[in-house]
Length: 404
Image (cartoon, rainbow, N blue to C red; front, side, top):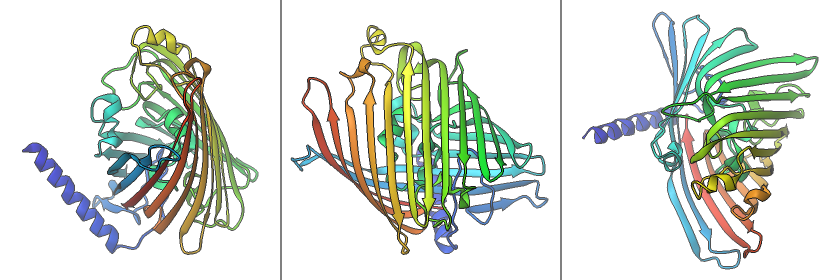
């Protein structure tokens, strides 16, 4: 009875937010997950009468249908996917003139809660409190995205394909609980961002932690100045920059005594391992064109065969991958995009993991901005394993996203 009541209440909230989003003018918004969004001309804003408290309420829903074929030549149906990929509520706000801001993000779909990987529903995705020391420097404490690869930091609501690349899926360091710091400034005409974090290393919604911590650092250089509307953290050039913009970045993460297969993510390991991750990425935009690329690398101190002696299955995916995508936004807000993805496991796990190459083309119809859009993607994937039959298949995916 309690479960049904909660679901009914959630349903009523979503319907209310949808009606409000349709009835109000659509505003362009870029969601940068490492900071509270407290611009009250976006989403639903609530103020205390004495302005000592403010809150911005938003939601996002992604409904998806996808099919995969048996092989590249056999177009018979192999897998079928139809689900609510993401359903989220986000609350951002401030506490008077104290310099404190916050954001809380909750997820309600099974796939968005990492239920299958962790064994329990991780409803809380983000729960951060920030203190703004100045316009250029702020710090946060809580559970949130680590400053790793760009595509992971870019919100799922700002993606130009129905999902992030395989390189991101394999190598990203995702969310963690800890202390995070952000500093921005410029040298002449070059803007730069410095980001760092010290976190537990166990990922989100963990019951306990150990004395091994994770250390993450990221630097971003913008030699041509800042992007419009935080456009370096949204895919596609919806802003149609009148002058070229470029952001180049590198990130490093060391997870000491990691207990999960991929550091902050994945199944539990039989023994702790030290995991090192390196990311290099860039994004460029000009007059509707956008080009984005990233490289990822991971190594681990415990080799897979050592873990397999105890568990038979749990190991860390080590190796490298790179992803690049190019797109153009037409004046009618239809975007055409192409993506190339390649991931190669380390020789230690080459018999367990395939060398994978994916070619993807996509079309997106934006209904005002990234918050409301229709996407369709067609992918061709090739998998290669030593001394085994290589495989390939096609995948087509359609996704509708609405939100405020």
